[in-house]
Length: 327
Image (tube, rainbow, N blue to C red; front, side):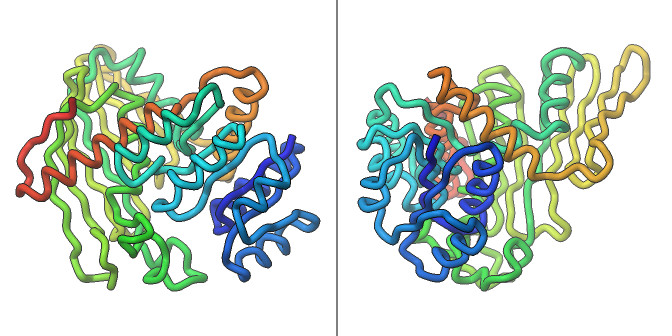
């Protein structure tokens, strides 16, 4: 198999390395000369292209779109038009309308939206606990944040996509939490939101988003997403009728409380767990789906739902946090 990597920044290069490790031939595409050189240095023998049309003309079985968020929809549609299956990093687009147009162009292609946390052992343990061990889920509190200057310390964060509106940046579009909370509890049906640009890290996009989420399942949730956390934070606390489940990325474990027995069960990661393993599992899942022509864990419809939540969150924030229904 041959993969075309569109966008040769850190995540594109990570996917390319993992694909090569899985026996897939890789080629890269990026208009930036320095990024093409860095990619070629990291993956000796890989072909690179400056223009997407030329890269598509060279042929591939599937594409991995890992460019700045504002380019995802346009580049993904171009890849689908050439008959390629598609892995597109989150977010699928920058708004739900663009995501719907992309979805309409997919035809019978096998597609996945980047959702690596669904392949992390501790998050899988949390998913299992919510389904099987804590009774009916009632409430969830979640946080996901990282100090933006620490994310890619080798480059000026102020020029990266996260810091700039026109590239699709902002804490809200770093949408992993919305996606995996929907995986845990089903679709979101209402949202209220406040967005803040604190001014503490010299960016034009919002660096803090705080939401209240209502799920179709009846679960009520709160979610904070930010570019401010030091150290990095990802934590989900679920309250159920028969117990509690908590995942904390820094503690590297999920803990589950059984209210009837009064006991905690700890699902800890193996010592020195390599975070890249979840990306390898994610890509293996996608390749298996491509070969079998089956659905993926995060189809385009789920990516579009995430963006409907984001659109509603922005609408709520414009009106001072008024709840907005997602229909």
